[in-house]
Image (cartoon, rainbow, N blue to C red; front, side):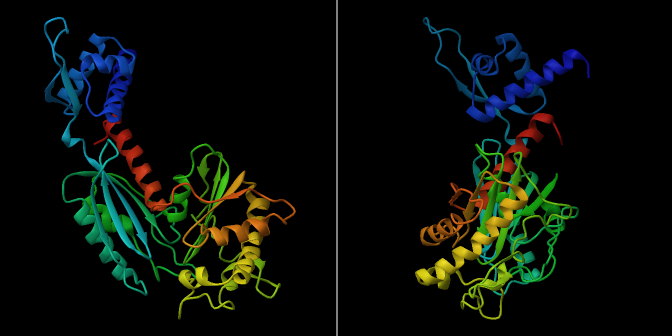
Length: 361
C-alpha cells in the first residue's frame, strides 16, 4: 500500500468511526469530526458510498436565504452487518444481535432445563441464536459460557465439581451456519471482568454464584493460561467451617448450602442463612483472596455473582480479608445487569466496527 492509499484508508476509517458515533452527518460535519478538509471528506464519502458502506439518508439541512448550501446527511448502509453476542448460563441462553451503533436490534432467550445436559443446552443455543439472527447477515459472534473454555478449540471443558455443563459443548460448530466470520468463545467470568476494565489494568474478578470462578486481569488483559483454565478457584485450599484446610468447593456441603445431588451452590439458601454462616463464608473467601494476592498481585478484587455481591456477604468477606497479612481492597461490581453478556456485547461491538473499517468480508 503506497502513502496515498494509507492516507485514504486512514481518512475513510475516521469518517466511518465518526458515523458510528453520531449515526448521521453531513460532509461538512464529517470534516469537523474527522479533522479533515471538506473536499477530503467529500472524496471519502464518495469512495465509501461506491463501496456500499455509506448511503444518502434522503434528509437535508435547511439551506438558502443566508443559511448556506443545503447539506446531505449520510449514514452507514444497512448492509454493513451486525454482530451476535451470546450468553450460555444456568439460567438459560440469551442471544443478541448488535449493530455498528451499539444498539441491540434483536434479542432471544431460551431456558435451560435442570440438570443441564449438553444436548439440551445445544438446542437452546441454536434456537435462541436462530431467532436473534433472523433479521439479516451476522458478521461475527462472541460467546460467553458458564464453564471453562478450551483456549485452542473454543469447546467447553468439563472439570470435576463443575455444576453446569455435564460434558462438552461446541459453540463454534453450532453457530457457524449463522455467522459469516469469526466466533470468539470465552468463560463468563472473563467476560464479566472485561466489562469492568475501565480505569484499572490489574485486578481480579471473583465470581460467587451456583459455581465458583475467577478472572485475572493483568496489564489490562485477561490472563487465560495455557489451556484457558486460569482462574478456576474451586479447588484452592482455604479455611473450612471447622477451621481446617479444605478445598473451596468443599466449604458448602457441611453448611447445607449445596443443591440436591449437585455441586451447585444453593444461592437462595445461602442468602437466607444467618450471620454466622456468612462469617464462615467470609473466612473461606478470604483464604481464596490471599492466594490470588500472592500469585497475581491485583490492585483490588471485585466480588461478583448472585451471592458474592450481596451486601451482607460482601461485608463478611471484607471484614475477614482485613485480617490477612496482605489485605487487598474489595468492592462490588459496577456492572450488575447481565455482566457477562455486557462484556461479550462490548467485545462484539468493537470487533464489528473493526471489521467494517478494515473492509473484511
